[in-house]
Length: 91
Image (cartoon, rainbow, N blue to C red):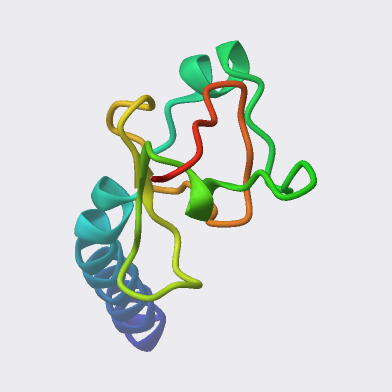
């Protein structure tokens, strides 16, 4: 019985530490669902129109990474291959 209690305690401590470590990761990833719906955002391009070619797009660390958008406040999961109604061609 004592061994079972120790195993349960270890499991609880492991899960607790994993949860604490993952909190900052979850805090940085955000979607502005209301704005996405209003602007008809989708994860696929519409012809040549895609987020990576948009004036409003804020690129991620690399060309393939998720980025942000000046229109979608607080949204950090914008696909460079996505598209929305606010698309404006980069100069």
